[in-house]
Length: 107
Length: 122
Image 1 (spheres, helix red, strand yellow):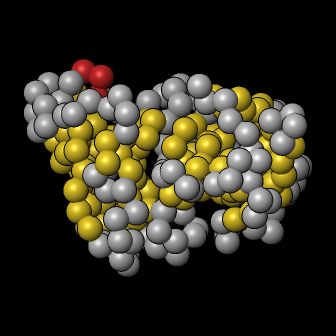
Image 2 (spheres, chains in turn cyan, green; image 1 turned 30 degrees about the horizontal axis):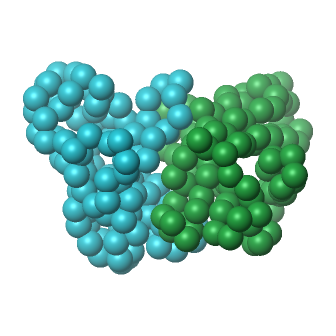
Image 3 (tube, chains in turn blue, yellow; image 1 turned 45 degrees about the vertical axis):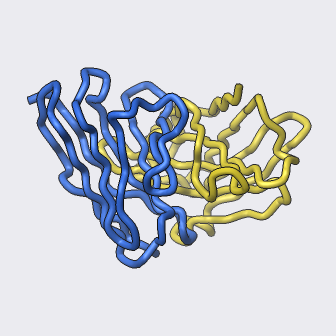
């Protein structure tokens, strides 16, 4: 199985901060990396697919980059609606695997 | 508009079999490339992919759970059913169903239901 390691596990930030979350794969996954946003009681939301393709309706302050084994999710200017938990997921190989999650909370 | 909704028991006893139903709308599970699958999240822990069924009845299972899982589809009812045998308290968590379209986005769950919390306790 491909292991996905996310860091940090928790991140405290203020409104307007630039936030970066890192995801490392245990082997190359090409560009088949997605990012999700989870909030309690709501359906998880796909933010980015194929490393850097922003889903329709997702604010442009979100961006993704990377290739091979190292990937990042960046929020350029943190907004109140962005306080949530974020997960990366590789879909290059079955079994599909997720990172451990990064909780973004208010500093 | 694609929607998915999970239903099933909120409480099961250890050793029992869990049966969850995903009822969806806005797409057909007979369309090429389309799939429906399940993902779970234990309280305070990470997401875990469980199983996926495609339009052509191809099924993909998590290796660690494959002997406990069964997935089936009823295209006309627009439902996918998950059964998990021999439930244990460690299986407690929120179970999500999700939509896949490998021809559009690849093998990733692009739309999710809100999830259903299942507790395993005597």
